[in-house]
Image (tube, rainbow, N blue to C red; front, side, top):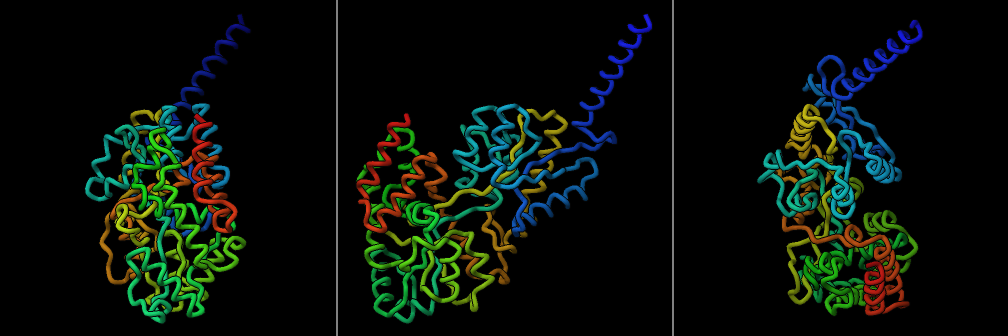
Length: 424
């Protein structure tokens, strides 16, 4: 009997501890709801500091909710996220990315819809940017920053030296500029394609959109189009043409993107085609920021929507579909605080392109203002954010081969279509 009594007492204690543990998942014991958020904010970057400061401010101003950050190195982050999602062991909140990267989490039922609170950002964030985190009519995250991938940075004085006081608005005009710069002994464009992604993400993502329109890429991936379409082949031909015009530095396939940006900043070239990630470093290092101009890709015989620039919403915070009602309300409260005018203004001051429409005063550099304005016309799909990893490898390596004359645009298009068909 004593033994039976001891077992029963042990079971009661065990159930009591379990009940306490379950309670601690929702509150800290003093009525405070605790939320854990997984992030990849391990690097000392301006935007990461803004995000962490906003969470610290939220915790200070809200006694009933406590947000705890668990930072995981970026290279390990998505692998851990997928693994935990498969085991239904995700934290309360976690950082995600749009498009093909968030879709599996939605399909697996891991994410909570934000439709209950999405009206909070109506009129503040353009629908064309919000849609990056919307699937089948449900909103799953709110974008903070935008990664534009096809901005043209240029030295105004170097263009003026060869008779161009304004950046060309047509591709024919751009080719004339390139020829004039070469004749003047000035390298036209700084390109660092060692990692093989710039020609695809920076160049083709917008160039192809001009030729094919924004529906081409998703339609083709869904089997309702073909990479062998002549419009896409014509877009690939631009890379071949620019290479033959000697538009780039001779070592463009042996230096990386950062090295090419530094070459531009130092005045070694007249132009540098890059993304919005270049705004901060260029403004910080440029001797005369007022001499730096910003432009989008020019038009190709009037083809496509020239107001669009290739880009994608940056990382957002999603919520676990397993949240209790108490935690859901606390998380909604946090998201409204986090994705506020305060945060967007802080990102602006850090030279980060933002998703929200914000007032920019005269203290904000002109380069930033122009780059930020480019996104307001809408975002064209970024190829490596839409293609499968296999297709991304093919186009990246193929564009490099085209640039050195080892492959034709048509051959690359055929290789991509073959991979697409074989993967179905």
